[in-house]
Amino acid sequence: MFALVTEENLEAAARVHALSWRESHKGFCSAEFVAAHTTARQMVYIRGEMERGRRFYLLLLGDPKGVVSVCGRLIGNLYVLPGEQRRGYGTKLLHFAEGLCTGTPQLWVLSNNLAAQTLYRRCGYVFTGEEKRLSGNLAELEMVRSAV
Image (cartoon, rainbow, N blue to C red; front, side):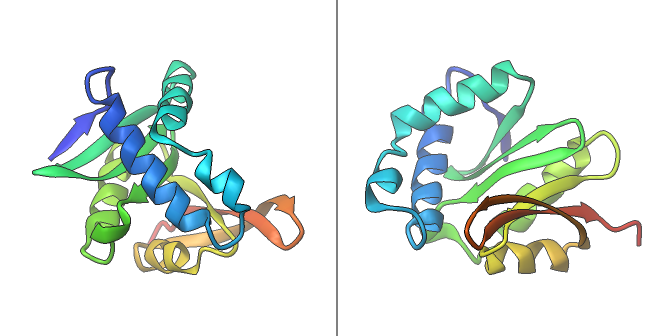
């Protein structure tokens, strides 16, 4: 069901990442910036992140459905293909990633990504109050898994 991303399946992971990233960012990024996030570009991105210690995993149910990364206690790059969303795959990816974390799971979510925030809150995550301002009204907000 979950496969560690290696050179053999990197293209599949990058395809999921690219398609999902483009869909989730098209409402607030320029069309040119969104279009630049191709499978080839995301292969370079994921490869670089893996070289820095992140482990990426594909959710495979026949075909790839989603991707997630883990580094220490940090969960990142949680993306589900647009046509596969709202089927529980994001929850599966999140719970899988939590099991790989060292320490209390932590993640960052875009301030305008209300669907992801709802998923994370439903799964027991709370906002810490830490944020990284990106531009204008857009920020990344830190969330951690509640001890409850």
